[in-house]
Image (cartoon, rainbow, N blue to C red; front, side, top):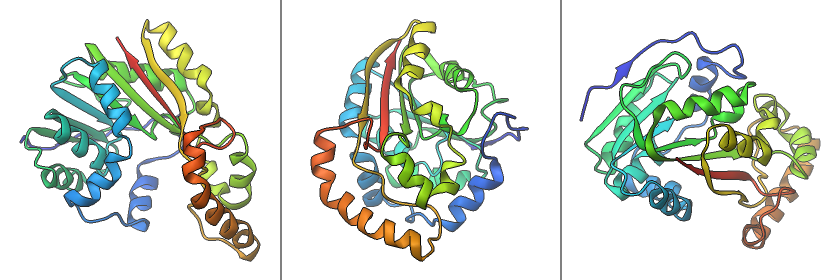
Length: 261
């Protein structure tokens, strides 16, 4: 275990959020106390993706997570595959990240509070993961390219972005507009990731839609919105097994992508 590192940054003018937004967000949406059970529940839903990522990276010894807070995914993958864990986030609560890592028995780690756009990584990792980070910025090419500063010469990069296009778009406009405003919908096009791979000479191991319809919302609802939300969340839960078996740009909740050097 190493000391966590704190490095203040100025942020990026292309960002759709800032440090205060994320600190306030996690204060309002209380997460489970760090424990192995809740971490495994969160992380295991992506086991298929993790296995493909590890295979693409060969025999990885280390992992970076960009935008790692609260550290559950980083802890899960590092513990499951015996890797050194490196996490970077704008949130200054590195203690929670460390507690999640410790809950999974990860002892070789570094939790860093820093600005992604000003921090220079001292070490690269064989695996880099970025989950729900890219879409919060305007300049998508720049953000994606900067991820490669953290990746070893033979490593693999796994990216997730939410999907708010297709049938999801009008639904979000009606009941989750505030949340949509901090997302760059251009990030939710497969062509963005094909261009990223092409200009950086990366192999695309997979690039696909995943998940059921994302009916959850991030705001308080008025009566009219509740009349839309309640049947939508019920239907989404019932239809999830079917929708997950048949992913589509029209209704799947996220895009998952894996790139290799």
